Length: 458
Image (cartoon, rainbow, N blue to C red):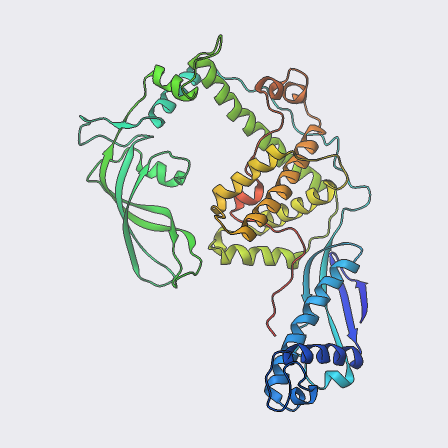
């Protein structure tokens, strides 16, 4: 096998693979022996059927050539990844189907691969970001948070709620809906009960329900999860014009302050100086710090990408977008520039994690694992899937830790207030930032940042 990889524009590389006729025939002969290993033919002992038997039967040889085609395709992929001096992120080999003629003339294949590598002089430390003021939590905000937590933690309904009560945040609303599926033109309808303001409820739906009363109907654009047309086929999410009919509005009886404190402490006694107000203040402060870190990280990503010229692997971006579509995300809701940015950022993190001192501990990996379970569902007793989750959790933990390293190495007014000695992170007791939503999760898709290639069936 002779392999040549030549430079092309941007992230692209051209490759050519040549197999001589003898190399092809050797692979075919090996597959013929494998195919005849358990074949029973009158006059021959099992395992001793001659190769001439297979070669005299076109259907059997067609199957052999198909198997060899798959093996060669896999071998080309593995060889390109192994022998390339750069990280291969996308492969598009020429389609081919082996024939008896190739055993005489040999086989020559070409194609395109895309690579990723950090440019020389890559800038990623001491990136100057915009100033950041120290977040604080005033008393009125603490009281609002206590009120919200008391309602969200409630377990019993108010029994004497007037029937014309308008829905508020934390109310339980039962409603019907109907819309036209644009893919089929068919009417879809159903009934659902949600808690208004729940994190799992789309914000647009929450806003549309607040202020509505039982018996009211209204129309608006609402996101829906539309199942696939066939069993097992992926569904999709679409924002569609729908008619909503409010069936009932129920309100939970808020927890008392004592009940809320007990809930937040898990039934334990409060420590010295620990009050409901101090616990809620810390929780709100944690949320604000998380928002600050998100904001600074978003800014850092933009700055790093703008300061470094990195060729874009457009074929890989196309593949990521195709995956998103197959996962049910409408094309109209996919931002190509965002996908491009997120994909390149993960490639950067993977490359940097090999250069800088990041080593996530077991606690960090466990958090990433459980975060993955929440997003993708439990692997159950499927050992292969569980191992895949563990591997992805380790990769994700390393990426998160690399992001934290980069942010700690940035510079901005207010940096000391967050990262310095006696800064917010130390005050909150954060050894690391925690499992934060990543750009890819916000875009609604997952990335596999190893090499990838178009699927071919031969």
